[in-house]
Length: 587
Image (tube, rainbow, N blue to C red; front, side, top):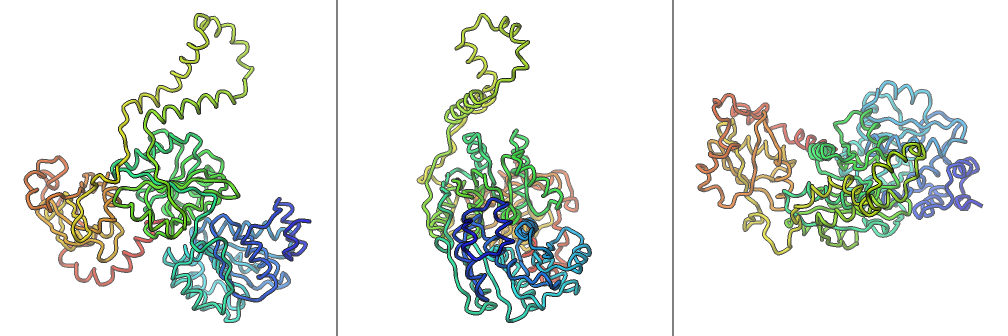
């Protein structure tokens, strides 16, 4: 007997389960399904990504739907388009033999009117992203006043993305006596607040411990100088020739830049972020699932829809702003019982964040060193040898063998092997033969830290470029994605300026401005060692310093929509817009 039958599921779902090859329920399914099938209750289920949460709520929801009625009875909210579509497709597979049951996905990036038509045809279950759902409610295109079940999937991520107001508004249009099922990988205070406000005495299921990482994932960190972050990424990839990975960056800009640089350097890579159209995202994900892409560079938001079981490595090119997000990242690997590795590239100033992550996931990180060039060459040689050993012989070349043997007859077997490997291997050897050591000792200095825990920076823009202290501060906050007090002690000179941020942002700031340009001119940011007292003359001699050479002030860079006259009026309503821009830049 299939073990799913023992959970109390009906014949139609068991038939679908058997067809899909499911045999043994996961822990969260084993705990949640009997409760949701047999009780009308609210539930909070905490389980990591990749543990089968969709089936844990999907099977009971399908069982409870009245297929004779065409009204909407179940609503599932999920954070992204990809996850929304994924859940809808899985529910359709689960309900394949439930005649008359219709599931409709509604999400941004597709025609809202077509989605409204789908709902009018009868949709007992709606899977939606919060933004599109709120839009359809406002336009009276959907009626959720009679639903019996509401599922909040990946609740922590929805709240992390800033959907609290949308969720509370949507839930206000649902009946008081509905059952609310909240599924989440972590339990930050915002999720607890939702549970307390909208749920009645919920039962709690925890798989493992709250906010812990998957037992199948090992965690490693590598300490490098911030300027060597990309070089370290390349070495980690080269040291793992069979890598099939997701690389996480904090912003869309960094995601696109890292992906483009990897492609230029000959890697099978692609970017996944919120600026891509739905069609572009679908093509990227299709290529990734087919392993045409080995290294998928993604933002945290865009990666929510990634459901691939064979990811070997997760690489944190930058640690996330919210430490809890690390749990979601590492959950992309070590799925379906397979082992995986989560790597973190950090600077010395970020080491304390590793301790914070360890406390949350209740796992220790292993400090490792970036491989040397010699080690990488050795790995690549053996990988090439193994590939050759496992290759099937193509007998179509048999007719050419006499001529080939004639050309090579003067060489011994050892000489032929050396020649062959030399041809295939020269690229790696030439690149790495003089490679420097990228590792940073914990005892070495890394940056200029102030007594107040802040770092002071030099930037080669100033009054000549249309900035005063307020417009430069706004520009820096928006560019760096920092909060209201994230930038301080802004000191604007004629052709250069200084500013401070908390030292924990040092690595991110240097990374953002590593190749930053305004109107074709490189903007240079570096750590100030003398607080900017005597740097003016020396900096003006730099090619990239001293403003736009030969240009009048009016030709310099001016922050969009900003001048001294409109500064006051513009500041009144900008906080919300900045927050939205900051949030969207993580997608």
